[in-house]
Length: 80
Image (cartoon, rainbow, N blue to C red; front, side):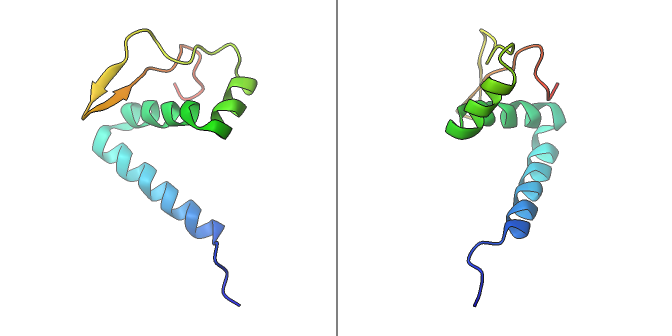
């Protein structure tokens, strides 16, 4: 029986995407975008808000890059 879900392969794909994004955007911008996606995710955002309630979600000056709104994480962001 063939497995339909391979968590190791999924991890490899996610890591490859993170590496590609970091190469294209730079480490800092890639981390900002990844953090913003965490906050926007229904499950991960809930976990992040519970784990780091002291964090401001975003700053007051979102930027737009390639049509995508990018918001800066708060000053205590664990990815900074």
